[in-house]
Length: 121
Image 1 (cartoon, rainbow, N blue to C red):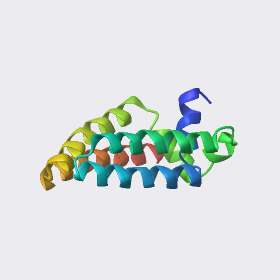
Image 2 (tube, one colour):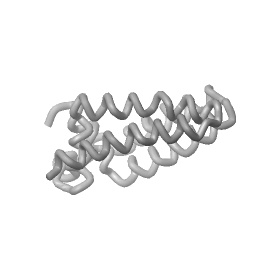
Image 3 (cartoon, rainbow, N blue to C red):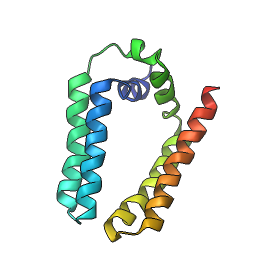
Image 4 (cartoon, rainbow, N blue to C red):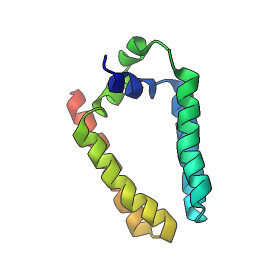
């Protein structure tokens, strides 16, 4: 497995998955309250902390799970691009409290996930 494949497969580890979801929740909270500093701390700090906790785990084992196979679809550049494009209106929508931009951003993430799921078949 390449370096990027190992990184993405580690997202299938339950500890990392839960801590990153917690980080997303805190980022949403802090962006809603227009606090960039804590949004960045939550959005960068928790993923780094969770990576340190799971580093060195058996990536090959996680790659064989359904979630591991799904995470490997995220390595493709188009999937990453769709997620980045979706993140821009999402962050902006949270900042200005606009449901339209939030839904546009979430739609970008969903399209990325649907494209990844289609590649699993």
